[in-house]
Image (cartoon, rainbow over all chains, first blue to last red; front, side, top):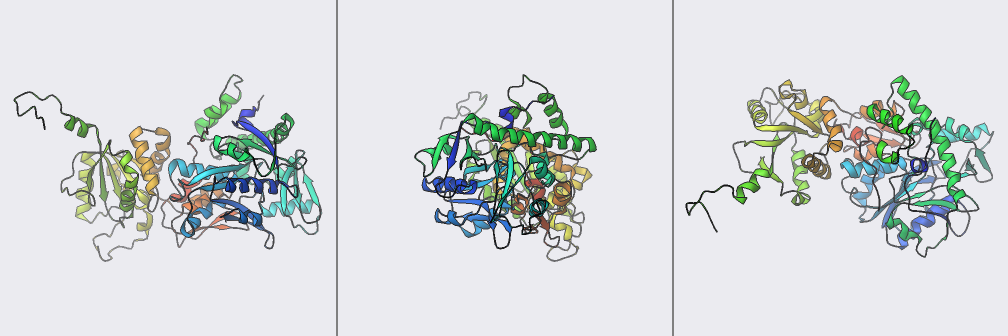
Amino acid sequence: MFGLYRQFTLGRYTKAFIIKASGEASSKNNLKALIKEAFRKDLIDGIIGTSLNKKEGFVSPVFIKCEKEVEKFEPFFFIHGGQNSLLKKITQKYSFEKLGVAGHSCVLDGINKMQYFGIGSNFTVTKFTLKIGIACIGAISLEGIKCLLKEKKVKNPGFNEIFLENNKIILKNKYEKFDFSAKEYYYYLNEGCKVCMNLSSRGSDITFVPSLRNGYSLVLVRSAKALKLFENPGFSVKKAEKSDIEEFESLAKNFLKKNIETILERAEFGIPSNKWDGNRFGRFTALWNNIYAENIEEEVF
Amino acid sequence: MFNPLKRGKILIYSFDNFDKEIKVKLGFFHLSSCSGCQIAFLDMFEELPDILDTVEIAYSNMLTNRKEIPKLNVAFIEGTFSIGFKHHIKLIKEIKEKADIIVAIGGCAAFGGIRRLNVGAQSPQPSHQASIPITELDYLKGKIKYVIPGCPPNPYFLYKFLLALLELNEEFLRPFEHMVFSTFASGYDILMEVVNKGLCTGCGTCICACPTKALEFSKRTQRPTFNKLLCVGCGSCLAGCPQSFKPYPQPVYG
């Protein structure tokens, strides 16, 4: 009954590339290469993100002040780590004019809302210059990750990397990697992420997909500013093939369908689902069933 | 300067008058509070030159020297109402009569804010024994159109609000119209409306919005934790949360 269009699942983008950083092939290194390039091209003078503290096993927000500090940065995808809580602290401690952000869609939603309404951090609100959205199939808690690994009967549930590969979610620790299907992963997902319709971080300059295919990660460029990152970059870059985009699209569709089911369930029980209340829900179902609707994203959001 | 009246000609309309007529007249009123909202209002003036062509500050105890309250289009009121204080009674009556709409600005006027902790009969104003947010006054029902949360609200937020008010941007104003019906706010809102309803994603925006560090982020649970002793009840956390209301358009890039 429902159709999921690319415009809805991936949002509008002008160009799609696949990128590969030099050195060890991993999606986190590819993101780090993108951030380094932003520093090199003077697009940002600081960036906020979340980093994995391997000793404590926690994911916490970090403020990266220069290109050198990117080396220590350990991005861990699909855990938000309270990234926006850092904004007030960094304005009290540091001086910056061009602030970047590397975060998932809800982190960017928080910032976009802050910029639209002005509620939140007054001093950073006008300083954001580059938003690197991270495509997200839904956040998971640390306990959830531990349980996922326990299901695989892993004795030492340490981990240092998470990414997408061949429509599977891959968790890596020091010694081996474990793959999980969408169904397995969805069980431990944050309840709040089960109502999300913005898996591709639409409100960003550029969307980084934490996928890995022959060492390459997919990147969707949405703004002219972000396109500068790909002019003589310090990493390997190729135009994305149709199959690269379709791989993430099919996974995103899979999760979106599950999310729609959750939204409908919530509606049945009268529990709010962030932006899907009242008229919006009605408009959504009407548009969802209208195959002639050309601008679904604009209409619904 | 050319003055048609002096030459015995009939003046139909002068540009001076025309200019004054089309300006939206704002008034700023202070009840029982710390004046922080008014300071935020003054901070906004860095941005205000953009809209000074269309706005006139007709009354403010900090900016104007007027004793009489003129006819106003929008009256911003900060602070709680004290029933035992004659000046407040007179002021509220006058504002109701002279203002087209009232905007409750800041946590105190909107939800009681820190004045909820008032035990009354304290110096320097022992007459301020009652602390009633103006949204609770039946007398002003229908007159208060919007509520601006925050302690104090961000100057940038006030600027955006004023712009939206001038442009009649209903999408922007709608959530603040709904907030008129809320008479209490606290950090528990974020727990009740977002965390308990399974909508929290752990982005940390509420922590950034909180002016008193009553909300902190738990690394273990990836959720905000609330310390009620530090909360001033300003309503910023729920208003700032990206999961609470999302009528804003997704930004479109070039």
